[in-house]
Length: 247
Image (cartoon, rainbow, N blue to C red; front, side, top):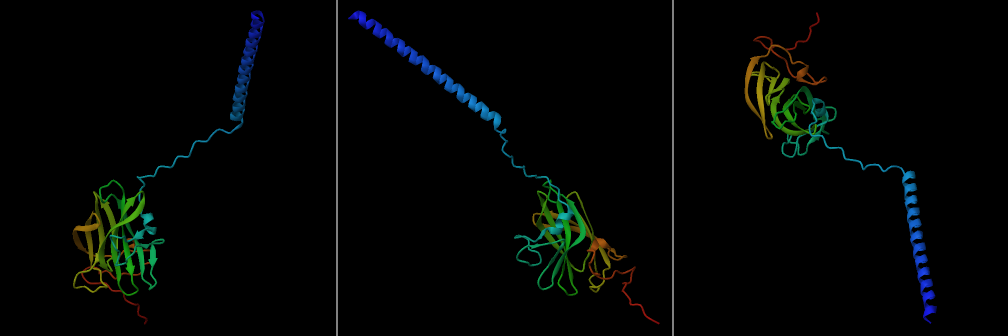
């Protein structure tokens, strides 16, 4: 009986060993086939594109006077001429339904007025309500990523055209025409040079000097299509426009 069991056990072990070898070989072939398939797919598929990276927002864009032609005038903190909401200039101009217009004037200067290292712009706005009055306002826009944001303003009065603006050492030097207290509104006999400083939302005048005006307002005191804002005296006597007389 023992002699019969030995061959049977040996045969069973041989069969088990053969099956194990076959399974191992099969698994090896299957793994090799999978690797070849992955390799073929990798060769045929296009290379993966890197995910797009958002362009970082620029924080040092320079503000120019050109941007003011489409800027907002007024803000929630600083209302322009009593308007409840800011108004938007279009090519330097805005019109209301009643015919009132606001025009951006030519004098403009760019520089750092508040000491934050970014450029600010100071310009001139003229409001024309349709009557004889034309009201001039100094306006300051802060530069935020190259965009003008309305910051402060200072009214210069009726028919006081600005001739020039310059910025130096955080201060604005403004030259504009005005009149003596005893002069009529149509006369501009004083050229005033004033210095202003920006503090928060307030444009403060530090001082001014006056000189006698001897010439008419230049293009720097208005827009290309702005009307005459008054006459300028020549010497000590006021100069008035006279109509030519026919003989």
